[in-house]
Every structure is written in C-alpha cells, then in structure tokens.
Image (cartoon, rainbow, N blue to C red):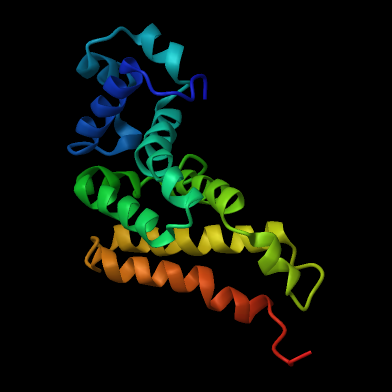
Length: 191
C-alpha cells in the first residue's frame, strides 16, 4: 500500500467503496465510480491506492485489525474477536459482498494475511511449536494453521449470513487458539 496511515481521503474513498458495494459486486465497481461517489478525481485515488483491492485491504486492516491492537497487546483475545465480528455484523451488507470476491484479490486472502500478521505478532506461536512432536511443525506452520482456521471460520460465517451469534463464534475462536492446536502439535504420549 502506498499509505498505511489513515487520512481524510482514505476514509472518504473507503466509505465510497462500502456504499457502492451494497448495491453492486465489488469486482464490478470501477475506480471512476468510487471517485465520483467520493467527490474526488481519479488521480487522487491513485495517489493513495493502486487499485480497489488495495483499498479493500486498507478497509480490512483499518476497520478490523488496527482498532484491536491494544486489546491483543493486553492479551484480551475474546474482546478482540468480539469487536471484529461485531464490526463485520454492523457492516453486514459490505462484508457479505466482500466475501463474494474470489481469486488472488479475494477478501478471504486479504483477511487471512491480516489474521496471519496478528497471530505472528500477538500469539506465542513459538511456545506452541516448541511442544510439537515433529520438528517440521515450526512456528510458521503453526501461525499459518491458526490464521487459516480463523479465516475459514469467519468466511463461512459471512457466507452463511452471520446467523451464529458473535459470542458463540468468539468462543469457537478461543477454542481454536487454545485447545485443538495443543492436541495437534503436543506430545500426546506423555513423554
């Protein structure tokens, strides 16, 4: 991304894309439509983002991940997850459209990258990997496993209309982080 921080133009462009996405698939939205709705000229868009997918990634990072960094850094995993899911729920129409994107620039790929960064930064995957019975099960694979697990559950929740209550889904996330991974990588023979 050209500009990682938030500024007024980034926010206006993000809101424009989100509003357009409610009525039209994201892959069909043009840069011109985004800039027209935002009241800026096309070159302004390109001064901030390479394309609409980079804007989508900016929205994902700045709406879902940046606000929860203080929670994660204080070990408040459930509160972090609850905030993220509640934010998605409030912007339900946008995220339902976003999840329909497929391929290299899919929301799934963007979300997974963001989760992987957060997992690597805030979860002690090295400690989890250190109890692994297999040397090839290193911290990178553990982090990837956790990121893909969380992403898959989130994407399924979005695809199926967000019918599972946020609190229940947050509990599933906590279980993914705490229980199954220790069974998968841990020493189950009492060694």
